[in-house]
Image 1 (cartoon, rainbow, N blue to C red):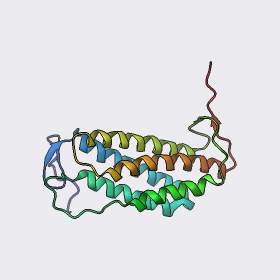
Image 2 (cartoon, rainbow, N blue to C red):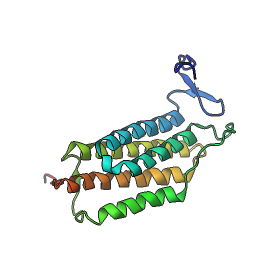
Image 3 (cartoon, helix red, strand yellow):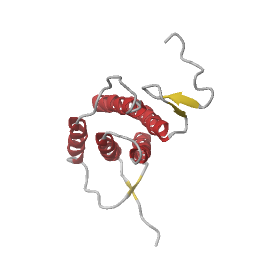
Image 4 (tube, rainbow, N blue to C red):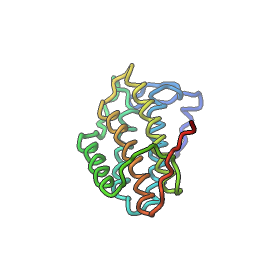
Length: 181
């Protein structure tokens, strides 16, 4: 691309992969736009947690894959896109299992916070849940690869465990929720 701006979106519409033009508020745009936002937050976490770079970089790559899958019109796109595999979900599960080995048992709800790095993990977790909501809404009326929904669900769990691990590794206490009764 010679220039980053195309001016084709100035009317409030954008093109999907395959050429279909849709309003910028279309649920498909919401879905892959929220995945893009999540990818940026994961990038922030990667900058803050240099020891987690490999897994987080892999997650960012998968989020790019998911974004491209969601940006394509399933009826008109002929472009070969990267794909998601069960092994991508297994990677998240294995990483959670590994982190959980050193964490204390979770006996109550915890409040996000305790350290800026843990807080960023919680922000990513919430952004991931928003992605999941948008993608499941899209799936009600459009073809969506079910692995996308599973991956996002597992990724939000991974980000929760990562937030706990960040505090544990720095020997900081989790802030338990004590409901007022």
